[in-house]
Length: 294
Image (cartoon, rainbow, N blue to C red; front, side):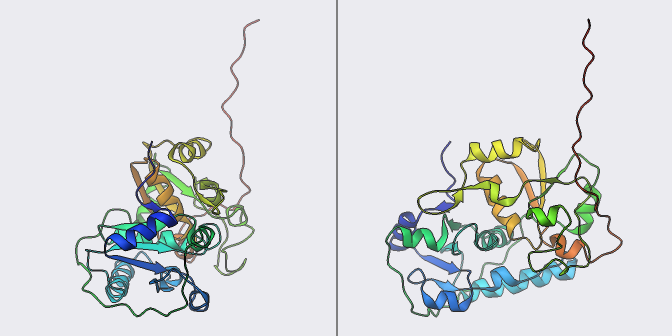
């Protein structure tokens, strides 16, 4: 199975930038960007920092905020957008969060630098410290894609055949911590009732160019360990939709046909005391053993 065109190698990105209109977006913080980045890349930190809610007002604000930001970055629909972070395992999936947001907004051409800036440097490609001022464009307004879930949809999915997939770090899954920002950053610790868990790091593997997303067959194998098939309906969540974006990309490029994300994630769910959570330690459930005739 050939790799998804969503993921682009450093050499492929260099060729893409020379061949067609491309807007490269660095999702790291401003100081890190200023210290060195892909030549021509612009900096957009809010890709990672924006905290969304899934109310109608919250989703409208999310759409308006990023339609404006991506337009200011020079995206008109003709350009290919390419996101990157420092390394795919060190930025909590922030480059993939950009990919997810543009996918939701219906943008036609979106890619992610596989391996991030570390892979770019590892390939011996040039870097720059020039602060790039983009030429604004009119971002294409259109209907959003059906990849975004609300907390009401997640609540309705509890106890159904839908696979709820929690991809947070292990201390969040076990309830020791409420978030990556601190153990008590969010008001409640735990997980959505009935959710399955695959830590987001498991969808990546080491390479000479740093961690990269696994092949489609490897991603399918990881999901099989949790009883998840490519034909399942999968609802993803993490804390604020970044690590789940990394997983969203991994599952889509692996052929999973019905994958959506609860972008508000644990940051929103934990703040509504009316919403149910599981707090007990995870337990193993096994099918009863069959009796063997003597």
